[in-house]
Image 1 (cartoon, chains in turn cyan, green):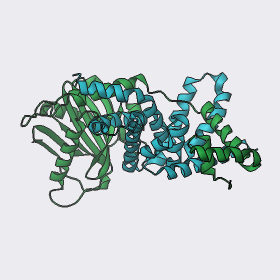
Image 2 (cartoon, chains in turn blue, brown; image 1 turned 180 degrees about the horizontal axis):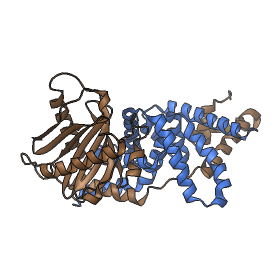
Image 3 (cartoon, helix red, strand yellow; image 1 turned 135 degrees about the horizontal axis):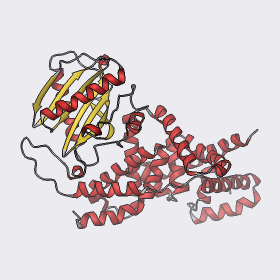
Length: 175
Length: 258
């Protein structure tokens, strides 16, 4: 059932699936949830695709990421069991890492986990600006579109998030 | 220039500062050890983030799932005939499916509560048939599906696979019925879908067991000492009763109570 419209949608949106999944993984912290959120976001995006035609200045990536973000936050509001879910997720997450890495790399992995954990521990509104800026290289304007806040708020959140990360890493290093 | 704010310095390092301001800052930095130290800290942080945080790639399975879901959603739906089940094209690949939903639920004591629940359960069933809505955790492994509900519900639902009897477990999902979270388990049988909703019976008034037909769907309901079960499907009533027996047996085996 390949329609021209669907083909166009896939050409515009599917190249950004990695970016969508990365944002979802950092916001959900669980691979299954992240996959489900991305799938639902893509379906939502298809429904909104008509509206995307008019928004020339918006990049397709930022547009998709905004939908992913809204999907995740809708789920969070619905679930309201985030704390418990996170404990469960971290267990499976660390098991997954153990599966992927042979024992020899465990030390290196431990060092890397410190930074990843510090990002994970940021409040969601700080975590998302870090992910969008540092891992996906979005401009301030694009982040402002995705997060639905003014550019000034993006700037202050980024600054505060970075300072928190630096503090967290300093605390880890302290004896 | 006056001392820049942290946000201004960040914007400069991110290449987001207007050219005039950026030039001022560049002139300021060499004269201000404090700002230079701030810059070095930020650069070190950026290096650590980019070197040490794993990048994620969308798994191939997800890519395939998304493409399949998009195709299903984009293809025109056949017109719904009166009394016929709404089977989305996305479900064509899934043989027969049944859903067991378990959730926390406070039931009203008023008359008609059974009727309302029947409507809600039926609505959830139909909603689950829409493309992409069937499962939150697609898995035929009960040991994957059951722990998925940890932290999403305040009880751990009994989950069994009946593949041996021709009703394979397809997955589970969190659903909402009567404004309460319920968890759903999905099973399959040929082209049919069955929804069974279950929640702790202690949470609300018991409603008498029932087996009825509504809008072309069959609905079964019963209580155990622990859980209230609702089963919905377009499957024929004899097979639905057969499936219900399996669920009842599994419940007894899990809880040790009739």
